[in-house]
Image (cartoon, rainbow, N blue to C red; front, side, top):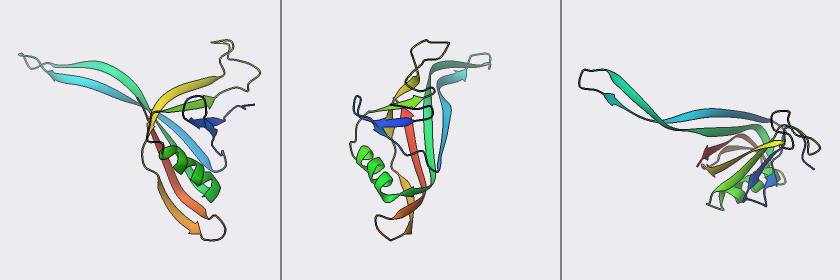
Length: 133
């Protein structure tokens, strides 16, 4: 059962729950534009599309959770990202029955720093960048 704030990532239909501990989530718009100047010098701009760039930053993350992210990255394919804004029991008033946003994304390589060598390790500065296809 998914809860408000849960984030799942992976191949569509088999997404894995990402740990919420130490995670910061941000989403930005990226405009794909074509612009140029007309004969009289006026600047014109056509917005072709607006795509999302989603960033997940972990202050600290355990080795097991990092291994999950690396396994997903190594799929080297289009991924499904589910971001829940309500629990499974109810939807939003805007769209009854819909309780998550879904994005199809490509994942950039992971930045990370190992802080602790014990067991499966403790990592810091892990940044996951996901770009909407």
